[in-house]
Image 1 (cartoon, rainbow, N blue to C red):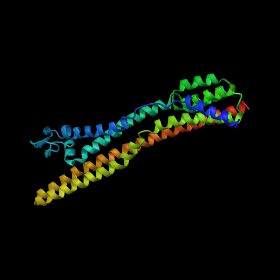
Image 2: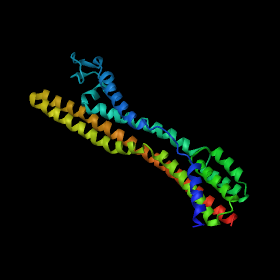
Image 3: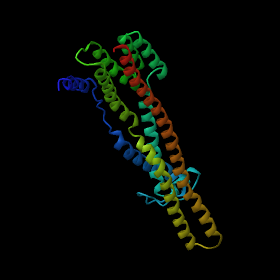
Length: 287
């Protein structure tokens, strides 16, 4: 019992030394809703403006029945009500790409992570913990934050006399794990939107195409001769805008998702290397 009491005290100290980052995640629900509304506004009032059609629908409303688009872009309007949803999905992807790029760039910090770890290892080998902490302040990234939390516990354990070496190493490892558990969720947050849209956008595009084809064949039955063939070809062309927009949105989502996960893997590897460096250094220098 006497040996477990110091360990509990160390755990209590480590829980207060690493404070959780309080950040609002309102963008997670506000951005998709805002982007879908913006997608409808673009589709209805910009692409579907009356001036873009030879025979606009004077009644207007939620979904005006415009005829004869004057250019290529207004033809997208005739793709149907799925088009604004796909535009909103594309805007959502772009929003989270920008948000993740800024967050992950900040988490990466300044300089090369491997070089930063080598500098810390050099200072620890010379038993200069304060210089190693200074290097963490210069790094300013997630790896530096985790390393700094571990170094503070590292420095505390040097002067602690009521624990053996294994308990001290365990305390340092626990501090690193707590700091890591606070950093990693920030890196992976909102990536689920990119992975979800990557799958759903293509299906939504196909749904829009199917709906457009149904409308085209319905119009085909109402006409005859050359006019029927013209309506069918025009309807198919308009319906395929859904497929193109869905596939394009999905492609952007997949590419950026892979880019971000690769960067996160690099940061995670640096964090793991940091924890290993601290525990091995303390175990070898302060037996």
